[in-house]
Image: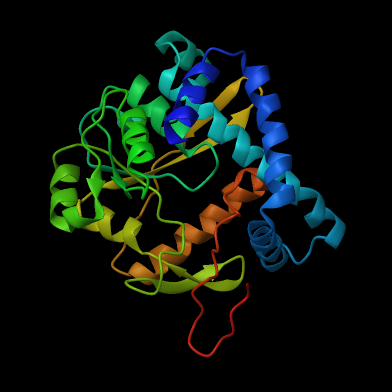
Length: 287
C-alpha cells in the first residue's frame, strides 16, 4: 500500500495544481469527518488559544485546517517529483533572502505551518547554501526512504538524526551550513521548559536559543504560506539581540513572535498536534 501511495503521488505531480488542490479539499473534508480524535485535538487547541473568538468562528476554522493539511500533503507530489522548472515557478521566495549570502552561521526558525516542506524545498533549490535539518525517522521504512529522498532532492547537507548529538549539529552550523529548525512542538517533558503560548504554559524545547548560542549563529525566520499559485516563502530579517544569556526569555520571545505569524493565517498552522499534551505539575490534562 505504501508503494502504491508513492506511485499515486508521482502521478499527481503531473496534474494541474488546481486539480491537486481540489483533491486536497475533498481529502480534507474526509479527514475532518472520520479522524474524530484529531478533530477533538484541533477544537481543544483553538478553544485554548482563541477564547476571544465565538464558538461559531472556531468551529468554522476546524474543517479549513484539515483541508490545508491535506492540500499541503498532496503538494509533496509535485514538490518531490515535479520538473525543476515547475517547482521553481510555484515556489516564490520573498523578503530578506540576502540573509543567506555568505557563510554566516544561521539557524532558520521554521514554524510548523502546513507549507514547511515547501519552504525547505524553496531554500534548497533557490539558495546557494548547503542546508541541514533534524530528521525524525518514520516507522514505515518505505515512507521513510521516500520522505528522505524528497527532502534531499536539491542542494543540502545530510539530515541529522536525533542520535547525532548537539556537537555534530553545532559543528555544521559553525561551518556555515544553515540549520532548518522546527522547535515549536511538544516533544515531551525531557529538556522542555514551560513558557507562555497564547497565554498558557506550554512545554517548549529551547533548542532555537541553544543552537544559536552554541553555533554563534543568527536566527532568521522563514514563514511559508500556501497560496492558489503554490507557496510564498517569506524570509524575515534576522532577529536582533538574539540569543541572550537567558534561555527562558529567548524561548518565551520565540513563542510570542510565533503567535504573530500564526495570527496572519491560523488555518495553516499545525493545530492537529497536541501542543498542550505536557502539563505543568499539578495541572490537569486538556485533551
